[in-house]
Image 1 (tube, rainbow, N blue to C red):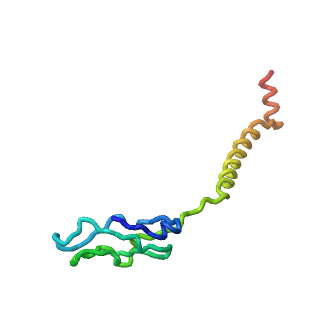
Image 2: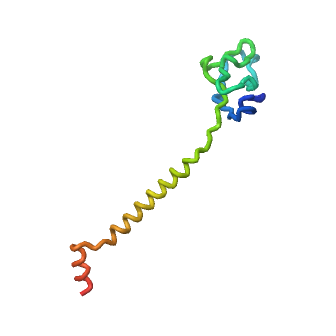
Image 3: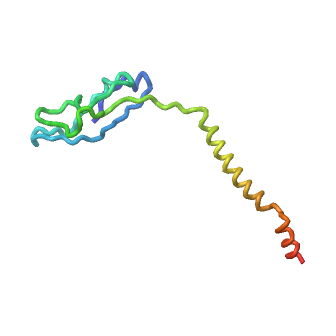
Length: 122
């Protein structure tokens, strides 16, 4: 369970990225926790990380993951670029041109099919 407030989220506008949503632990049954609390208040900037080794587990309980595996971090929000609509318009234009090109090509009259059209009229 994640708790606390990250300054990187609050002040820098970042997004909390939860890299692990569950954790397998090993230990005696009476030592196993019902839940593991992950305090994200230590994430003050985009370089800070919470690792498996940082989790507070009861005595005699071990995490079954690498100790340097990331549990949580804060990432910057991606800014929407002004260029994206232009790219979409270019794609739409390209599709429109392909459709228009097919229609124009089908309407062309060539010397070969001109004669056959005239024959059909007779």
